[in-house]
Image (cartoon, rainbow, N blue to C red; front, side, top):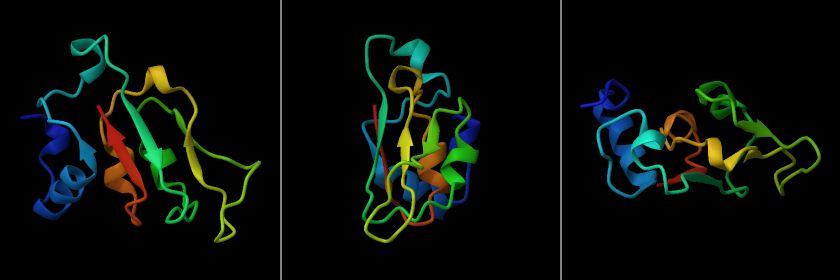
Length: 104
């Protein structure tokens, strides 16, 4: 089992809830599944722009969109480089508002 998925039970449940697709047990998802496009979606209704997902991303492709403001008055997070996304779920696991959905 992947070390990233050996978290507490509650964190694992939250990650499984937001993960669309089966977990294959490997951190290097991109190399094993070369033809697929991993991506994340941020639900701007729930995003409060805290930046925890930005800090959690191991490939630094999540950023806060300073050119837009959501209905709550915050700068929402967005994916800057979709092909570089590995679908590791680090951003979704760190999000306290469960605003991020990971697709594999």
